[in-house]
Length: 491
Figure (cartoon, rainbow, N blue to C red):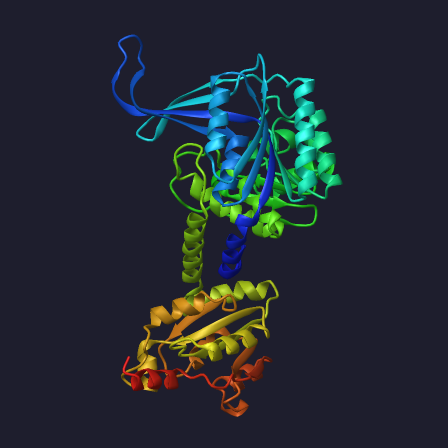
């Protein structure tokens, strides 16, 4: 699944306008980091010499941290115990920019704490202190009132972050979804447990692979099985879509009409804790500012690839996503540049799918609006556009020893970065005749400064039943004239 870099950049610029309400189980994540240099004399276990102790918001708290890190406004509604960790959660929420909270302090309840012990960036042990009993009826009523108040102010997105710690009981979930629907608010749920029918009416749920398998009771070993399991959930639990997070296999976005599989970004994984929170946060904010579900999921997939490279329950910032987008675009454009024999195999696979293949060629030295216009017109005539690019030696033969201005690798990279271009093939001859003979395009496109009879390879294309088309030339643009102007100004 390929997305235009510029449209995703535009979406990133809008994220700070998001305003999300999140309800769920908030936790305190504590991290004890140090060194292990010896074993305990009391038992065959390592002794961790602690150097640093840090505390972070976890669970639903990590969801709102990720929302706030995007510059969007986040509102958390949750429950903590009347204890020291509960006060720590409150303080962490207060210190966070773009984040406000309504916390219900419930007596005789423990705040969930997860303590992780690390050495050399690897976890040695995790110790949990928690209760999973349902919150009281009064607490549920306070949550309902707070949500009703928040959603009456705005109708963006409601996130329910269910970690199974008692805040989101089945009855309360149903009530909150109904409140959201009354306010025309989308509902996204990070689910827990084996029975997803308690989320009936949600717009999207985001289970991991194991949760999807348990809740559906179906195998989840390949793409088709994941799709089948997700559609079983959609049909039986009454939700509109499923975004299944699949660890190193990426994600699968499934509706009853279609399925989209997003490959994971290849990078070193240090810690997967909280990655699901990042996914939920990105999708919620993207949907709130007007993105469609596919685009929101694609952006979340990139963000998830970033956050697993960090230690602890980390967040992702817009600058990091932007950097990853450019890296992804660069990798994608490099894949578009192909040798002639490899291109033949790729074009054969396109044709097997019934796709119409077009071809145009040129030097494309100092890419200008005239080139863009030609490529745009060419792409409209076909499903896949192949561009033949004169090599540096070929350009020197045609244009003189001072050309090209840009190297063949630079020109190929620029062309491959364009959404209208599907494949770039370098050729060394003065004309692309050999390339045309090998590829046998369905349509050959040149500029209208040519006559049909003068188009190289035009007779061949016509003989095998293809078309030869002339694209309009955008006046006032020329690489040669641009170079002459620059030389005249002695730049």
